[in-house]
Amino acid sequence: MADEGDYCTVCGGTPPDKILIKRILVDGKETGIDKLDWIIEEVKKQKLTSNQAIAEEIMLRVARFNYIPTKKKEAYREALLEEYHRSA
Figure: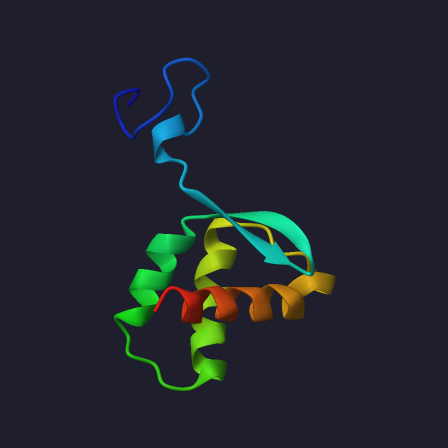
């Protein structure tokens, strides 16, 4: 059972090389989003055309790996959609 998964040999948590955090501005503050580049690439594969659908899919996926404060959801949505279009 101890051999299952990929864990840090020092602390038992996520290994440092598996943390893929990208920093973006959310509501004017630098915010780290784990796995953002991968999430954007996966959403692009869906070939969604409307900004609303793109933003919803990104938010859904980002929320799986990151905490999004309820009061900041719209700010996150805008920042993530902007980052999606910037990466095109």
